[in-house]
Image 1: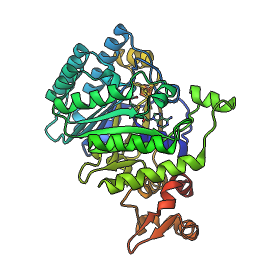
Image 2: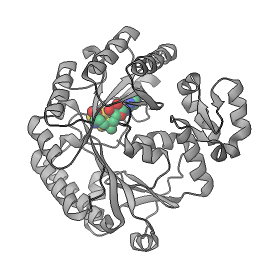
Image 3: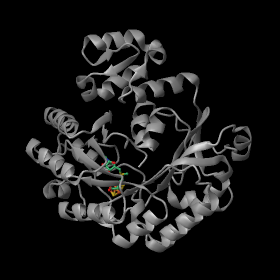
Image 4: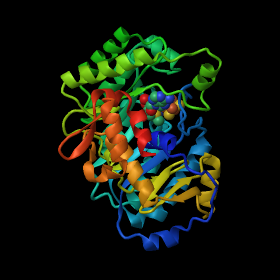
Length: 396
Ligand SMILES: C[S@@+](CC[C@H](N)C(=O)[O-])C[C@H]1O[C@@H](n2cnc3c(N)ncnc32)[C@H](O)[C@@H]1O
Ligand code: SF4
């Protein structure tokens, strides 16, 4: 998952004019620093969830093989510009790849990339796709962090989310990952789901805490355009309960805080020292390269996106053409806005010097109790964390 873009696309809608003029060679020539953060989008899912808007499709064996060939070709073209400190396999469901497909992917990446500086290598896993042999292969290949989409520990809620695993299967998968030697595991949960009571959410948090994951992401359900849930919302068949969602958000912060987790970003909690380095790099405005269909990259003053459709991405890349279908300049103003909006959501907040263009707006929402000013930075209040998207609007 490239969740950052989820957020950033809402706040900073790009003019999506297709541009095929992207010249990688010219760009590489101008590049002065090696890129340290690499995102790889693996777009296949065995089952499509009705709430999810990430770019994904059902996997067919031949299509996956062609995609892997294209991805490795694209990696090779960028290899000299990369020395990753973090790699993130997102999707889609990267863990849906078979063992031979993983062998091809991981072997290919190792042959192209200088991994000597690598600190964190994350893969997103759906509990239904976790198996002992796959987990061992990933661990032995150097992947050292898992982000597992549990979503809920309530079987009824899992059904309504269209998930194919139940709570027991998710717990078993967590055990398999521990057995394979993963000591940095994150769990994704979703609250605000219709039918999820406060008590059931409390139980979900308790069951998560019993497993002692190093990291937890708790997202409020978003009704994304082009999803089944969005259509149901439009037809009046689903209705958000904002009061209950706010209670669930507050309960999360309270229970995870008591258990020793830091809310280092509005939706992300970790044990001390176990923050996601990859996502923190996005939030602090570092350069990153995204490979694979629909992946965004931001390097220096350029941002671009790869073609979304996997078949077209693969054919275009294998034919030696650029897979980029959109690019834009990241002006100093845009960079500062994004940095402010993302920084404000984190525990570090926004340093006063960086906040100066929005001083009067910040003073305005300080009176509403959404932010407060410390000696050297602006920080969200607990109420501001609840309304973080509203706060972020002042930076647009
Ligand atoms: C790209 S998904 C990858 C995880 C993996 N494919 C799975 O489903 O287990 C990343 C995470 O985004 C979150 N997510 C996706 N769509 C969401 C939505 N509409 N509202 C809230 N969270 C969402 C889920 O928690 C999910 O685990
Ligand atoms: S939530 Fe995960 S498994 Fe479900 S459709 Fe999205 S990426 Fe695929």
